[in-house]
Length: 499
Image (cartoon, rainbow, N blue to C red; front, side):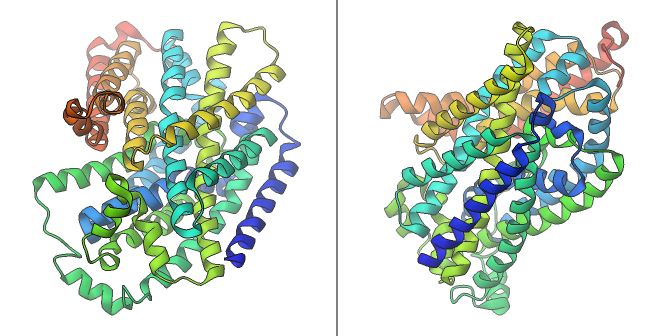
């Protein structure tokens, strides 16, 4: 156990050192939010990847998909590689970078205002992004809490406080480039860690090496026959976790900070390789969980109740008897993935609210004060996220509320405006309103289930658990409505700025 804690301690010291050294150059709002648009391919791609994959993926989605679908769960990882990384960078990175530089855009709400000449759209986006990134941030805490409880044997609340403090320190030291440089280190740790993790899990007694995997793949447990409802649930998971990144502001901002088109082209392959290794490896490990829990997870359910799926992967790692030093590396891997996501989400939410909402209402506030305001709000955001994490809501549900509502609202006007020149204000508002309305019911159901008597919770709980399905429907309908309304209204509602 001492070796594990020493490994974690070294990681924390190195991360804080990076923050102190890199933070000295962070002076302006542009430095804080997009790094002065000076990020190279490696910084941008690894920052994108580490923001994409956190404990939410390793613990929440990998475990739940493995429990529900066996080896079929690997499809979610492959979807993240092909659609969430390769296709996203191919179609979005260069056009977004160029547009952001030409219009001097730093945030998603600022893009909506300048692209569609609508301050109301900007304000709506500010509020939606700030409010609904909180559940996503909270889901990361939930993942880290389950890891600490199982692998370190410490109270998950205490560990979440430590992580909140570490994320807050990085955010206070600087901004985008501090985060990106920390992400570069964390990306390297994640790639090395996942390779070692796969090696030791595969050779564990429960799996039995490649021969054990081959036998598992031939069994009804390893590759179960899925019915129509199960296939739809799996497809929803693949689509939400892959295309959901196309509308998330903290992911899109990674493109804003890229130095030039050449760096954007290089970033395509770096990002894809990273996703293949990390997401592919993470879901592969999760898909083997039925080999470790031959009782059908009855023991985990007895220990953790309805939220047992959040404890599947940590329990697998404990049962695999991984050496102490490697366990430290694994924990650092999960910490690295999660801290980078927390910083990215927090910086995006807070810079959006301060710069685009408060800064617009009171335009004479000095830039230096706005920067301080962002950092103070970051501390508040981290604290609120921690409180939401203690609601004990499953990781998959928390994340689906954020991704569904935010991507359902803003993916359509953002993506279509890059390729369809007739995308206009009417179409954008139509897509935003439809996507928001369709994705909202699961989150509302969760809130109702927390406050209503047990007998009145059936419908609410059913809705709360359908986040991925509603998220996919929201994104699809939003794109359709935005395209149709823009095509029909055509030149009657010209954009303020040509695409």
